[in-house]
Every structure is written in structure tokens, then in C-alpha cells.
Image (tube, rainbow, N blue to C red; front, side):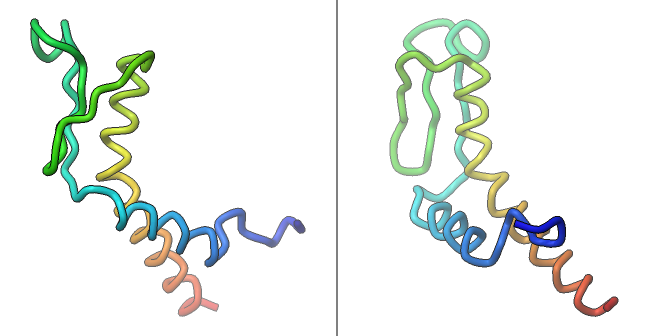
Length: 89
């Protein structure tokens, strides 16, 4: 890879987008026992069902839950900036 090549090429971006589109629709919300509620286990609430984790830290769980909302926004921003860059050049 040269210094002018993007780490996020079109093929990679499409792959990320397809994985996001295949996942259960958002929003996903992280509920950590002891932080967000006092009984039961830590889980991520989705529109379809709750997802429980084993061995994940609260930070891991929050990252996973928020990725469902963050990834589509980041993809849209990358595309917006690429389109803007094309119009500038």
C-alpha cells in the first residue's frame, strides 16, 4: 500500500455496510448490572431480543451496543466526505 491509498477502500466499506445491514435493526442499548440496573445480568437490548454476554467488560458491551448506531453514521460520513473531495478536485 502506498501513502496515497485509503485503508478504507470501497470493497471494505461495502463489507462493513453489509454486516451492519444484516444485523438486527437499532437502536441497541447496553444495560450493565450495577450501573444501569440492580438485578439480573448485563445485556444489550435490541428490537428483536436481549443479548447477554459472558466475559465482556462494561466497556466492551457498550462498544458493541453503540456500534449498531455508530457504524451507519460513520459510513455515511465517509461517503459524504469522499463525494465532497471529488467535487473539490
